[in-house]
Amino acid sequence: MKNILLIGVILTGMFLAGCENNEILLSEKKLNSELNGTWKIVAPRPSVDFIETWVFGDGATSVSSSKNNSSLNVNGKYSVDAKFSKAYIDLSGYNFNSMLYSGFTATDLNRKWTLVELSDNVLYISATDDRGAIRSIEFVKQ
Image (cartoon, rainbow, N blue to C red; front, top):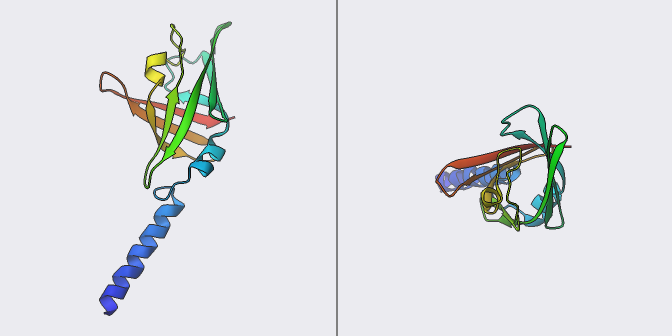
Protein backbone atom coordinates (compact mmCIF):
# COMPACT_ATOMS: atom_id res chain seq x y z
CA MET A 1 0.00 0.00 0.00
CA LYS A 2 2.88 2.39 0.77
CA ASN A 3 4.35 1.70 -2.67
CA ILE A 4 1.10 2.65 -4.38
CA LEU A 5 0.90 5.84 -2.32
CA LEU A 6 4.54 6.68 -3.16
CA ILE A 7 3.90 6.14 -6.88
CA GLY A 8 0.79 8.34 -6.65
CA VAL A 9 2.77 11.14 -4.98
CA ILE A 10 5.52 10.93 -7.60
CA LEU A 11 3.05 11.00 -10.50
CA THR A 12 1.18 13.93 -8.96
CA GLY A 13 4.48 15.81 -8.57
CA MET A 14 5.38 15.17 -12.20
CA PHE A 15 1.92 16.30 -13.29
CA LEU A 16 2.14 19.55 -11.35
CA ALA A 17 5.70 20.23 -12.57
CA GLY A 18 4.48 19.76 -16.15
CA CYS A 19 1.71 22.32 -15.59
CA GLU A 20 4.27 24.89 -14.50
CA ASN A 21 6.29 24.39 -17.69
CA ASN A 22 3.25 24.81 -20.00
CA GLU A 23 3.55 21.18 -21.01
CA ILE A 24 0.07 20.15 -19.93
CA LEU A 25 -3.25 21.79 -19.17
CA LEU A 26 -2.65 24.77 -21.45
CA SER A 27 -5.14 27.64 -21.39
CA GLU A 28 -6.07 29.33 -24.68
CA LYS A 29 -6.97 32.52 -22.83
CA LYS A 30 -3.58 32.67 -21.10
CA LEU A 31 -1.69 31.87 -24.32
CA ASN A 32 -3.61 34.59 -26.21
CA SER A 33 -2.78 37.07 -23.48
CA GLU A 34 0.93 36.20 -23.63
CA LEU A 35 0.93 36.26 -27.44
CA ASN A 36 -0.66 39.71 -27.77
CA GLY A 37 1.87 42.38 -28.64
CA THR A 38 4.68 43.16 -31.06
CA TRP A 39 7.28 40.52 -31.92
CA LYS A 40 10.45 40.89 -34.01
CA ILE A 41 11.76 37.98 -36.07
CA VAL A 42 15.28 36.89 -35.14
CA ALA A 43 15.35 33.61 -37.09
CA PRO A 44 15.33 32.73 -39.90
CA ARG A 45 17.59 35.60 -40.80
CA PRO A 46 18.62 35.35 -44.47
CA SER A 47 20.29 38.76 -44.29
CA VAL A 48 21.16 41.23 -41.57
CA ASP A 49 19.68 44.24 -43.34
CA PHE A 50 16.00 43.43 -42.94
CA ILE A 51 13.55 44.04 -40.12
CA GLU A 52 10.32 42.16 -39.72
CA THR A 53 7.81 42.68 -36.94
CA TRP A 54 4.55 40.87 -36.27
CA VAL A 55 1.73 42.29 -34.18
CA PHE A 56 -0.71 39.81 -32.63
CA GLY A 57 -3.96 41.00 -31.10
CA ASP A 58 -7.65 40.07 -30.98
CA GLY A 59 -7.28 37.29 -33.56
CA ALA A 60 -5.56 39.49 -36.14
CA THR A 61 -1.94 39.72 -37.24
CA SER A 62 -0.13 42.53 -38.95
CA VAL A 63 3.28 41.83 -40.48
CA SER A 64 5.70 44.58 -41.49
CA SER A 65 8.73 43.38 -43.44
CA SER A 66 11.26 45.97 -44.58
CA LYS A 67 14.68 46.08 -46.19
CA ASN A 68 16.64 48.98 -47.68
CA ASN A 69 13.81 51.55 -47.88
CA SER A 70 11.41 48.93 -49.26
CA SER A 71 8.64 47.47 -47.18
CA LEU A 72 5.79 45.01 -47.37
CA ASN A 73 2.84 45.13 -44.97
CA VAL A 74 0.42 42.21 -44.84
CA ASN A 75 -2.44 41.21 -42.59
CA GLY A 76 -3.87 37.89 -41.59
CA LYS A 77 -5.71 36.13 -38.80
CA TYR A 78 -4.70 33.77 -36.06
CA SER A 79 -6.32 31.52 -33.52
CA VAL A 80 -4.85 29.60 -30.62
CA ASP A 81 -5.78 25.95 -30.16
CA ALA A 82 -4.65 24.51 -26.84
CA LYS A 83 -4.81 20.76 -26.45
CA PHE A 84 -4.07 18.85 -23.27
CA SER A 85 -0.31 18.83 -23.85
CA LYS A 86 0.31 20.93 -26.99
CA ALA A 87 -0.67 24.31 -28.31
CA TYR A 88 -1.03 25.50 -31.87
CA ILE A 89 -1.30 28.85 -33.60
CA ASP A 90 -3.39 28.62 -36.75
CA LEU A 91 -2.36 31.40 -39.16
CA SER A 92 -4.78 32.15 -42.00
CA GLY A 93 -5.98 34.85 -44.34
CA TYR A 94 -2.58 35.82 -45.73
CA ASN A 95 -2.95 36.72 -49.38
CA PHE A 96 0.09 38.30 -51.03
CA ASN A 97 2.03 37.36 -54.16
CA SER A 98 5.55 38.30 -53.13
CA MET A 99 7.80 36.96 -50.40
CA LEU A 100 8.45 38.50 -47.00
CA TYR A 101 12.10 39.40 -46.39
CA SER A 102 12.22 36.56 -43.86
CA GLY A 103 11.66 34.21 -46.81
CA PHE A 104 8.03 33.23 -46.20
CA THR A 105 5.23 33.28 -48.75
CA ALA A 106 1.52 33.44 -47.99
CA THR A 107 1.30 29.69 -48.63
CA ASP A 108 4.08 29.09 -46.10
CA LEU A 109 2.29 31.11 -43.42
CA ASN A 110 -1.29 29.86 -43.90
CA ARG A 111 -1.14 26.71 -41.78
CA LYS A 112 -1.28 25.37 -38.24
CA TRP A 113 1.98 26.11 -36.38
CA THR A 114 3.07 24.26 -33.26
CA LEU A 115 3.73 26.61 -30.38
CA VAL A 116 7.13 25.38 -29.23
CA GLU A 117 7.88 28.17 -26.76
CA LEU A 118 6.08 31.23 -25.48
CA SER A 119 7.65 33.13 -22.62
CA ASP A 120 7.95 36.77 -21.58
CA ASN A 121 10.51 37.52 -24.30
CA VAL A 122 10.55 34.57 -26.73
CA LEU A 123 8.05 33.14 -29.20
CA TYR A 124 9.09 30.07 -31.19
CA ILE A 125 6.73 28.36 -33.64
CA SER A 126 7.30 25.49 -36.03
CA ALA A 127 5.35 23.80 -38.85
CA THR A 128 5.83 21.34 -41.67
CA ASP A 129 5.50 22.95 -45.11
CA ASP A 130 3.92 21.44 -48.24
CA ARG A 131 7.24 19.85 -49.25
CA GLY A 132 7.61 18.12 -45.87
CA ALA A 133 10.33 20.43 -44.56
CA ILE A 134 10.14 21.78 -41.03
CA ARG A 135 9.93 25.59 -40.99
CA SER A 136 10.47 27.56 -37.80
CA ILE A 137 10.18 31.19 -36.78
CA GLU A 138 11.77 32.65 -33.67
CA PHE A 139 10.69 36.01 -32.31
CA VAL A 140 11.70 38.32 -29.48
CA LYS A 141 9.17 40.58 -27.76
CA GLN A 142 9.42 44.29 -28.54
